[in-house]
Amino acid sequence: MINRLLDFLNASPVNFLAARNLAAELERHGYRRINPCEPIGKIAVGDKLYATKNDSSVYAFEIGQKPMAESGFHIICAHCDSPTFRIKPNPEITCEGGIVKLNTEVYGGPIMSTWFDRPLTIAGRVIVRGEDPFSPETRLLHVKRPLLQISNLAIHFNREVNDGVKLSKQKDMLPILGIINGELEKGNMLINIIIEELSKEKEVKKEDILDFDLYLADASPACTFGAHDEFISSGRLDDLSMCYAGLEALLHSETSDTTKVLAIFDNEETGSQTKQGAASPFLASLLQRIATAQSGTTEAFHQAVERAFMVSADNAHAWHPNYSEKYDPTNHPVLGGGPVVKFNAAQKYASDAVSAAVFAEICKKAGVPCQRFVNHSDVAGGSTLGNILASSLPLRGVDMGNAILAMHSCRETGSVNDHTFCVKAFTQFYNA
Ligand code: CO
Image (cartoon, rainbow, N blue to C red; front, side):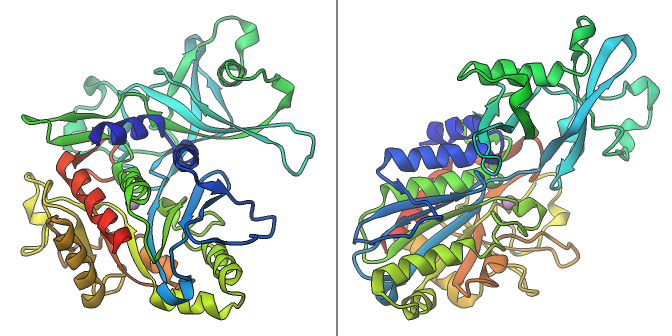
């Protein structure tokens, strides 16, 4: 099971690739793509449907044996974006000796120092001229070789480096891409790589490349480590590990009375306020259209929402053996200790005593341990999907996730056992 997760992580360097891989897996398991531009059509018991938005969010539905108005739906949501660096337009800066560096801006909240001195690559989407100017062609790009590096300043120029360094996003974080090889390459280094990569699959001409959404990604593959191979080292565990656990559960759970929903949103790391983010009405409208197609009334949708249960799955902070003072004294989940339910008095998390109790019972039934997380009261902590989604869909549910170390590092640390536990708990949730 863990190898499938590692393969998914390696094939999903950024949101667009993750969404494509999730959609491909759904297709392989008989899910039919619905086109939101067209009527939803007839909905039958057992139908497997999915939709995407912006090539970067995915919504899958397995229609239950009972109408949603009677049986509600069980939804797992997670996000497929992770902190990284976005390549700006006109990115090439040519320096001394013909060295080309790329102009970038920060996406989300990465631990920037972890991006230094490691082989990086580029991934995302490239927009190519099509027949219709309003719907150009989207081509996904993933350069599968080390291509760039953001190099540190030598310690000899900064003797205080180990006392903590303030980093400038504009000055310090620009990766080097190459050394110019002839006049023709000036200003064209990145575009030449894009053309070469895309043309491997299908030829593309330079004049037809209109724009791109490209990001940096760690070029080293995810792996397990530890005396017993009990840990996972990878970029983007937050939140691709939850996306994949949700997918595994959806595909391997039994047929159920209750409709199953898996919602993978984009842009959680920048606040979810996009058409493909958790604040978008897109998921609510899909659910409404499905419930209406099923029962012939919009009343069905509102009943379904009232009967539904949400598991908002986003990674939690594992207790760090070097920094125990940062954690709550009585609620600090550990690596390998099972799924974590997150609480916050200011309601940054959707969990309450009722929904947490429901989720704990699901874990118990699945034979999986369950932990609880609360912030140290002097620490602000983060937010996630559950409450943002609740503002358009007033769902009962929990915020939970697997515990990881070094959240938002270029390489985070997770637990192999926690992945298995989480898939079991999610499968039980969909079966229930
Ligand atoms: Co997250």
